Every structure is written in C-alpha cells, then in structure tokens.
Length: 134
Image (cartoon, rainbow, N blue to C red; front, side, top):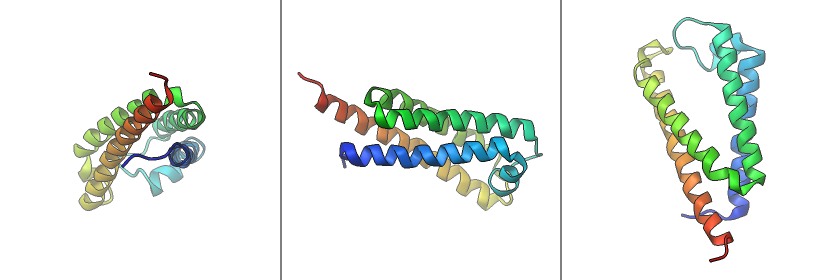
C-alpha cells in the first residue's frame, strides 16, 4: 500500500513528535525514563541522557524530513538500521527487563519500528520518483 504525500508527511510528523518527546524525557528526566520506559539492567542516568540525545536528534531529523522530501530516504533508512540494531541488542538483554515477556514484547516493538521505518523509506523513494521528471 502506497501512502499519499500528505499521509506520509503527517506520519513523519507524528513519528518525529514521539521521538522528540521520548528523547527530551530521557535527557531531562533520565531516572523517570529508566523507571517507566527503559528499565534494563542497572540504571546509569548519564547513559540514559546520552540515548535521549540520540533519540532527540533522530526526531529532529524526522521533523525536517517531513518538510524536505530529499531527506526522507536517508533519514528513514538510518532509522531502519538503528531500530534493527536496537532490536538485536534487546534480544541479548530480554531477561534484564521487568519480565522476560516484557523484554520480548519490547524487542518485537523495536523490530516493528525497523520494518516500519524501512517501509516509510520505500514509500518515500516511490513518491520521490513520481515527483522527479523522467
């Protein structure tokens, strides 16, 4: 299913907002982020803040890509790789979550983020091809 330009733009905006909010939470309130979202292993507020900076930067990149179509494929491709590697990392740490079930659910959701980002990159490339003269 191919999305329209408008639907893709709003999907990117919504996804960007999610990442900006998540990144800011991790940077500004790392203890809260650790307790409520990323409770894996031993808490380290500095590293949680570092991850927040990366997530925030990604969210800003997505927001720019929503309005600059030439940014979409590279940013979304990077997100697909990032989420894919993130999912692989979670496979090795599922037993460090609140429960093994939570660890596997988190891993599956992160893997979905990789597939969804790859799909959006594909849609973006198709829409970009339509916009370019032949």
